[in-house]
Amino acid sequence: MENFTMLQFFEWYYPADGSLWRHFKNEATRLKNMGFDSVWLPPAHKGMDGANSQGYDSYDLYDLGEFDQKGSVRTKYGTKQELIEAIAAGREVGMQVYCDIVLNHMGGADETEIIPVKEVTPENRNEFVSDTFEIKAYTKFTFPGRGGQYSKFVWDYQCFSGVDYNASSEQNAIYSIQNEYGDGWQNVLDLENGNYDYLMLSDIEFRNPHVRQELKNWGEWFIETVNCDGFRLDAIKHMDPAFFNEWLDHLRAKYQKEFYAVGEYWAPYDLGSMLAYIDATDKRMSLFDAPLQGNFFRASKENEHYDLRTILDNTLVQAMPELAVTLVENHDTQPLQSLEQTVEPWFRPIAYAIILLREAGYPCIFYTDLYGSKYRDVGRDEQEHEITLEKLEALEILLHTRKHLAYGAQHDYFDDINCIGWIRQGDEEHEKSGCAVLISNHTEISKVMYIGEQHAGATFVDYLNPDTEPVTVREDGNAEFRVSGRSVSLWARPV
View: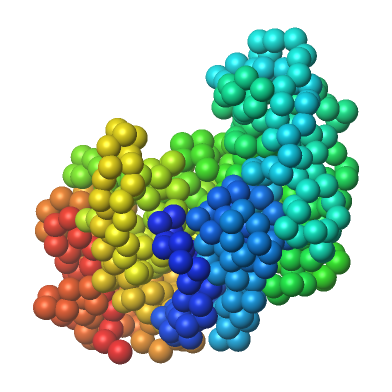
């Protein structure tokens, strides 16, 4: 088996100049040669903020940059034709292309309606603080710019379970819509705020069979239009897992294709609820390993006080490695974003070594670590900040090692609070394969590790620190590997 790696090909602050699809098309061959096998592209549909929308404020799922809606024809990332060409370019070089799917909510309705609601307590959404009363809400979506092309379905308040704005009183609150399909929230596994069905905007009502059918119809149209290989599923902890069971089963059966799916169930310190979601969906999808990213964040902040032996504790890659998509950062955790939990620069090479050079997990690389980024935005302190994220110079070396050398039996040396390591012994299928990884979060240190008698007499060099003196493997298959303080060393045979 060959090691596979995914790339998240966008970040929150990518310029709103319509260039991303062309950018990926131009980069596809280089990315494949670098060691990427799949790419996750951002939401392709028109959001309520038009050409400035990152896509997570879904307006019209059928508008992929084709219709003059919300002030533009193109999306932030480009036109429909550019999207189709980008996906084709990725697939042509042998990459799988996963598209971001945002089905939890919609925003930017075309008309208001007078609808029956009950107000709830934000901290406990199961607690109603009013009887049923009427508000004016933005819940009617007619998509006049599209004019019924591809679908004539009109979304009204019967298609939504909640809103957060009363246009009559101009008040913000969380309102449970009293529609014919339910007078409370849908059952979701996440119990934060009592019930976390409601996240934002107009919350989609999956108890409505017409909604479920329309989203199946849209899924078919989307697949046939763009020809993608799989999906990244947004905000799944706020949705009834039964919906995605039905939606994925329908599409996989219709096209007789195992569309890969990875869900965003962001619970950095609640592995139990993530495993419960996997059970509820009967392993139909992988999940991003939010707990591992949380461990990386803490380790980078706590410096030498963090016990490196625990870096994999309470993580999805430890509990269910076959369904774990491991990551260091994403568009939500990057500086100034909603789930900001940024791994400090000194620890990033360490974190990437952990997800790329171990046998378990499906690693996902973040765009800014490959390309860098510079932007300005207002933080939680209500002050404007200028952020510069440098690209990670070690990344290409780590990717090359993962693709060509990080194979064979793995043996862990998690025996020191401030220094851990592991070896991959290599295999016969990959020439000169095998490597040793050593990590320190404190001082310079060395550790004897067994790399295998088949490497006896071989010279190993530190790929990440080429000026370091080489190491020779002893006749018994052991070698003493070194690492500098607050660093990672990657030892392998020269190729």
